[in-house]
Picture: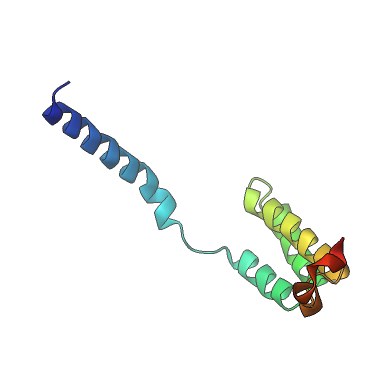
Length: 97
């Protein structure tokens, strides 16, 4: 294949990839329930975050983000329970072992 045909094929592949990713790039808005749940998590209101995420999973069972964020909330809650989120852990991370 000569250089011109290769560059045309490469340009077509790049254009196809960009067109295929356009809908994904356009969907940058955060679901309002996820935003509220994250605000609760960042304020250590785990019960409130779980309530919001459980509601999202119930209302949109085919949306994988509800399940993903619910799992993340459980991990975040467990890290807090283990006191890993406290600043002392970052001074001496051997405390976790």
